[in-house]
Amino acid sequence: MKVFVMRHGEAKAPTMQLGKVEPDASRELTERGHEEALVAAKWLAEQTPKIDLVIVSPYVRAQQTYAEVAKLVGAEVVEVSTDITPEGDPEMFASALMARLQIEPAETVLLVSHMPFVCYLTSYLDQRVQPPLFPTAGIAVIDVEPLAMEGILQGVRAPEQH
Image (cartoon, rainbow, N blue to C red):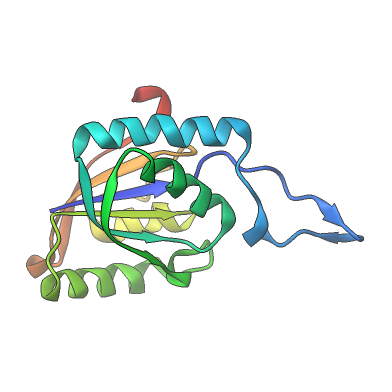
């Protein structure tokens, strides 16, 4: 099975509102971020016509990134999860995902999340690699064997490489 771990597209810098920094969860994509996400979506559509399971962070920039992907790639099941925000526990999520996929098999899974979560999640899914750096809208492709609880990183693709 293939697991695609995607970082959101370029996001706007935090702004001040009424003397306070806006919440990180409300940051939106820049115009470039939308373009990056669409380029990544085109590449993903070449890899697979449909994703069996999509899990997206509730943060606005991740939701906007997935909205670009959804224009080109169909999805069987789409879930929003607070477990894959920047503060999430990637090791715990990786274990839970592997266990879930043993019970509910899927050919393709897409996760849309943030740094540093995507780096560490990729490393937990393929424990042979150090956490890779992700460009904005970058996608790691991991061949996963849930029963063996292991994966093999095929590579991390940046939008410019699509």
